[in-house]
Length: 260
Image 1 (cartoon, rainbow, N blue to C red):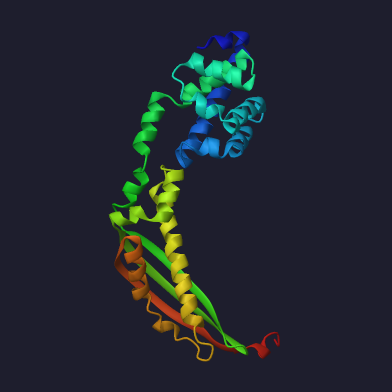
Image 2 (tube, one colour):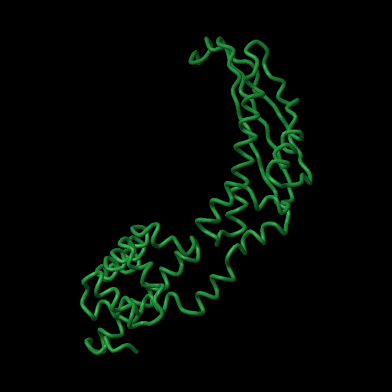
């Protein structure tokens, strides 16, 4: 137990210890979910989480916000000893010794050897898991063919199964996300590619349905397989299977709208 606890009576000491444990728990959750850089990249979000978790200890949350936003936090976690961290905080932030000691204890505990080992093992583990299995995607396309005096609502529904290859791990969008957060889960990576494929198919479907102003599109002839295979080649996937069906609601003259 650090000597700064001697300033407190037993009841205060127990409360402060529990609060610090909760602070460390909440900060670790943020790192686990968003990566080691998240606290200093998003200091106010970390502050908000702490205030919501410990509304009776906003002073400590504010002190941590100051460390995170000023750069002192990044400098402090590189120091090897608890005493050096406390002195760094006291000198750079002008906190009293008791507050500096308390903050040093939070930092030392949060960045313990066990936590560091856990984070090291967790790095890019989500990507490794993602690359090991196939993934199902559901796409629901929609577009409107507009002939000026009337429209046709176009739809396409599809279920797609893909298998990622190692090249999927070199996707530029994914690499940018992994640089910010190497702890991305396989579910988060799946959602990223799901959005990429959805946006791609939406663009192709929109172009297909609206390319001719005079002849309405034959939606069921949309070559879904060809488009998926093209996307797979560009993004490092193999197409396992797909089923899809296109339809439209028929031509609706604009002058009839609002009549009923």
